Image 1 (cartoon, rainbow, N blue to C red):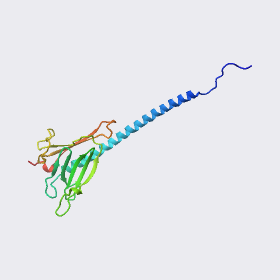
Image 2: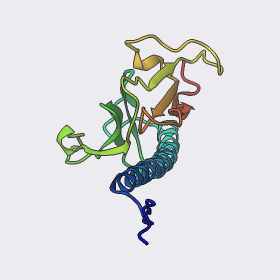
Image 3: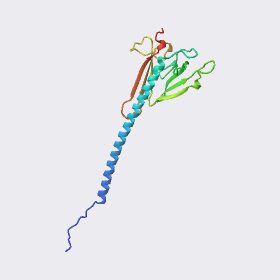
Image 4: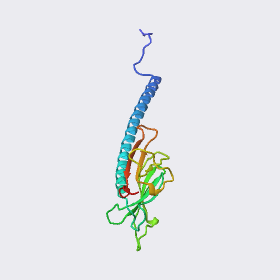
Length: 204
């Protein structure tokens, strides 16, 4: 005798399959996005730590070079120019008995260093022979990293106002703020140091 009761076949309907696929795709998208965010954040943190190390190394070189600043090899005053975004001075950085002309300066989001060696007979500092190197990247916009202090500075006090008279400078402060990805954590990193010019320490 034929069974008139409805019999249900095992399995999924097309609608159920489509819904399952949709849910699965949403889960995959969410997981992929989460993993991507983690890797991106870790990459930003790693790069910022690398930039901080880079800036500290630059700061060490800057302090050493400025501390040992001296008159140029043609007798010029040991400081050539000083502003909020650039500092130019003379220092023998390669121990060859000749003082190089050193220029640290900001260009957009990059901190740069220019070195001009004296050449010729008689010696001259030819601007065309300046070798410029990018030394710190990803600086925050609008930085004015240089401040200057006179002989009365004892660790606290007001910096010299701009424009600065280079003859008044005894201490130079350099501060660099780095932020590789402003839209991501962590917060910007600031590296700062002050250096007294040894050859001007007892100058009037």
